[in-house]
Image (cartoon, rainbow over all chains, first blue to last red; front, side, top):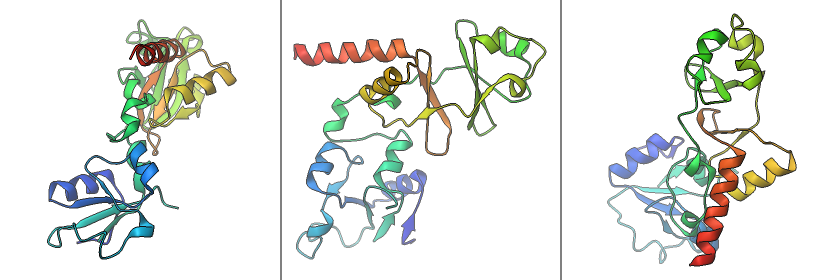
Length: 68
Length: 149
């Protein structure tokens, strides 16, 4: 399993394979727009408790705004 | 954990779907006309003219559909023996699909653009075009619908 992906095609493939999609941006930004099916766990609140709902047996695909 | 490095902006720049409040916004990728005529660099204007009836625009693209230039009415009505490469307007201004219609119209008004604007992804691949008239009409329709609801 790669640690990084760069293309939309790879994202779609991973999601089709059951990956969970996590948006680590702030709540306001997430509410405005996000990738379909993503859940929001803001980076500042990323810890054991906020990630407890994730399935440990499925890949987790995370994204923020851009390369920056 | 896998990092989608290019992030959300790159996803939207590919004209992929979105969720959230932004689904109520009109992004230009939602309304761009993908059926705009295209041609290659070496095609003759006379041949191109034959398939651009009703259009005042033909986008010059490479085999990967990356935008190279633009032919407007003046070029399309010009020398039939010239190639697209000889007469095209190279490097036209383009917009990403996740620009809102309001943002596009502001730019068109600020720069007095009356013709078609090109919509491309981050790699420069053509997604479609949107005319000033269509942009104005769509925004007016959206605003009227919002006011009525």
